[in-house]
Length: 479
Image (tube, rainbow, N blue to C red; front, side, top):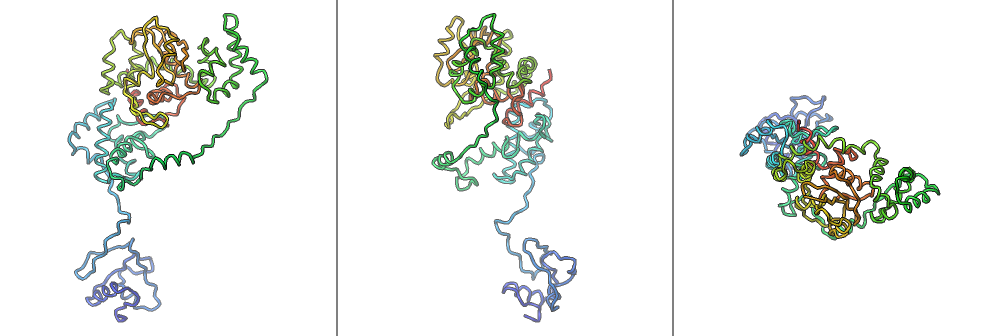
C-alpha cells in the first residue's frame, strides 16, 4: 500500500486507489485546488512527498472528470442535499396548454382584465408551477412567476401607487398564486403536508396564551367644563337659534367624546349620551371631518366619475353583468354601480365570532341597503330588524331601484340620511368611524375598496389582492 501512496484512507478508498495506480491513470484532486496546488498533479505524487500539504477533499464541491472504465462510480447524493431548482417559465409553458394561445391573445389585446381571465391565468400558471417544481415551490419561484405574468401581460398589472405591479399575484406569502397553491394542497394527505393542521384544542390553548399589548396614546386632558358642555347639548333640543352653539360645543368636546366612544360602548349608549348625533345628523359629517380633515369630502367629489368606471369594469364579471342588466335606463345609476361593486368584491365566506359562514351575493347586498315601501313606520322597521344585521346599514323608502328617502339603521335607531343615495352612503360609511364599529363581514372587501381608493383613509397596500386587482381594472377604464 505504501508503495502506491495509500496510507490513511478507508478500505473502499484504498482499493480504488490501488486500481488507479496499477493502471497508471493520472487523476486530479477531488476538491478545487488552491493556488499552491498544481492543476496536473496526481494524488500519488502529492502523497509521495513527505511533509507536502495535500489538497483536502470535499464531497459537496467535487469537480469530476469523465468516467474511465476503471473509475469507481460516485455514490448518489443524499435526499436532504440541496438540488438546483429549475426555474419555471410561463412563456414556454402556456402556449402548449389547451386554450393557451387563446388566453395569450385575449390578455394581450384587452385593456380591462375580467375576473374570469385572471382566474384562468392563475389556474394555468399554478398548474405549470406545481408540475415543474411541486406543490411547495420556493418564495423566489413564486415571485419570479408573478413578475413574469405582469411582464407578459401588462393589463394584469397591479397599478396601485408604490407597488411594482406583481404583488397581487404573490408577495410575502399572500396573493392569487399562494391562494391557489393552498387550495391545491388541501387534497394532500395530512402526513404529506409540510405544515400540520393543529387540533381545535391546540388552537384554543394558543388563543388563551396569546397576550396583546396595546400601547396607550397620549390623550389630551379633559377640562372640568367638558361634562357641562356635553350636558347642555344633551338636554337642549336643537332650534334655529342654538344650532350654531351646538356645533361649536360639539367641536370643543371632541377629545372628551372620542375617549368615551373608544371605550367601545354600543351605538345606543353613544346616542343616549350624545343625542344630537341623531337629530342633527350633519354632526356625523363634522365628527368625521375632525378625524380626517383632508378626506372628508372625497367620496362626494370622486364618485360621479368613478361610478361609470365601476360599472364598465364590472361588466367583465358574468355575475356582475347579470345584475347590471337588471337596471333600466331610468333606474338609479348610483345604486347600479354600488351593486356592481358589492357583487364584484363579494366575500363568500365570512368569519363571525370564530365561526365560518357563507353568504351569497344577493344576501350580502342586504347588509348595505334594504328597501321598504313608502309610508312604512321607519322607527318600527328599525326596531324589527333581524339580529343578523348588527352593523350599520341603510333603509331605503320607495321602489327598490328608485328609492326616495334613506335612513341609517344604527343598532335599532334610525338616523335620517336624506334623499340622495350618495349622501346616504357617505354618511353610512362615516358612521363606522364615528361610532367605532366594524364593517359588516359580508361587505368587508366592498368597504375596504371605498376606504382605500375613494376616501383614502386606508393604506391601499394593506388591502386584499382581489381589491387592488379590481381597483386596477377600474383605473384602466377610459370614459
